[in-house]
Image 1 (cartoon, rainbow, N blue to C red):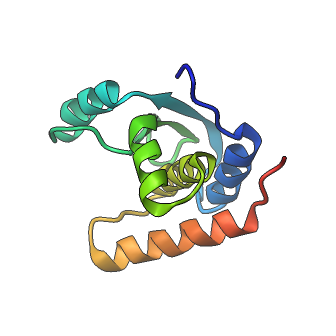
Image 2 (cartoon, rainbow, N blue to C red):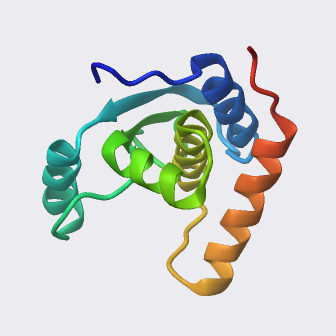
Length: 134
């Protein structure tokens, strides 16, 4: 997205750390930074839900046993709003969303409070372990 600056190395370092939770080989994981409009379209098309969301993960693998082929869409408008709300830099919120998406590809879910808390703890642990490069 034009005008958006993220710390690419930091985001990829965090994503690599999160990918250790994936128990299959990884063919590729693409990260797509996009707008609210596109996120709302994807959210409606694939989840049947209205409105934009912050992150969507898609496992495009041929089977549950084949290497992971994934796409993770990150809604940068949502990321910007959440960064302001949580009073964190945009690069950190964007990396958190990338980690969240990778954890979904690993099979983790956040559909219940206990699962949501587990994912949140893993996200925080991964982000703390990574160090942003200047």
